[in-house]
Length: 256
Image (cartoon, rainbow, N blue to C red):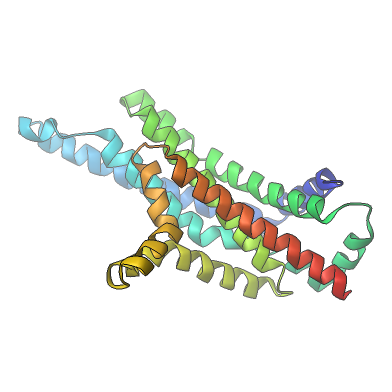
């Protein structure tokens, strides 16, 4: 895995000197902040109604009203934004011709792919870290379930890493960043909604579609459950497209 740190440092520096990076971060924080405000406002309204109805007050739960919907909404936002992060990983190299120079450096293909993967993953961590002020505010005013809070962020991180691996592979297939982003979004959306057709696809095919659906495996994290099968799905999903990226890079090297 020689040379991964040099690639990681270069990709990270290139991303954070670009105004696109800060635009993506700002959009994620702004949209996530809006959902957080909307959920908190809803809970405030329910709390006011509960003042005159003891039956409602017994059903008020900050975890169900704020934390779980926020995690679900943030996952949808990531679905739209992650292709914008991964679109340039290899497409920019291929379009500028710098990938030819990259191939001549004393580093392995595994090091190149790992460096780019980790740089995109760091951006994801920064995006999620920018929202930590939301649960901190909840801890000041209430008693949210920390298990559900932590599992929600773990689920977002695993889902985001899966999108990074998928987007990185598709970026290695095209020289056009816009095409890479568009195909990445379509592919991610397909894996997201795949389970929706399981009910009318027959028992055998329906089970396969449910097992391949990201949304199906993400649900347990929103419920505060760290399920080994669901964690394994995201790990193997990321590893599979990581492997395909290696093969794509190897094919490009062979053709060159």
